[in-house]
Length: 77
Image (cartoon, rainbow, N blue to C red; front, side):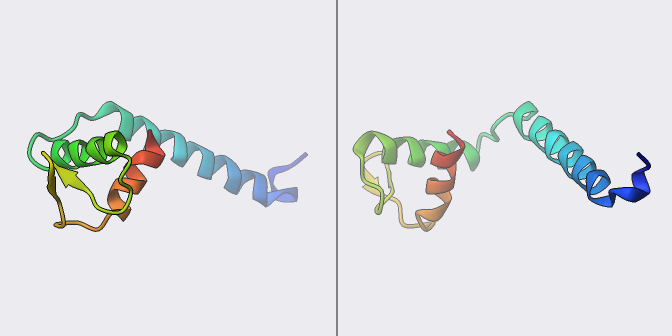
C-alpha cells in the first residue's frame, strides 16, 4: 500500500514518535531542587495523609497552588 492511500497512518506514526520523544525527555531529566522537589513533597504528603483537597507541606496547609497540580502528579505515579 502507498502512504497516500492511508494518510492517517502517517499522522499516527508522527504522533507516536512525538509521544515517545516527549516521554524520553521527561524521564531523562532530574527534578529541579527549588520548585519541583517542593511540589513532589506536597503531593507525597497528600498521598500519605489521604487528604485530596487540602495540600500540606511539613504539616502546614500549602495553599500556594490549587490541588489540581498535585492530582496530576499522582496520575503520573
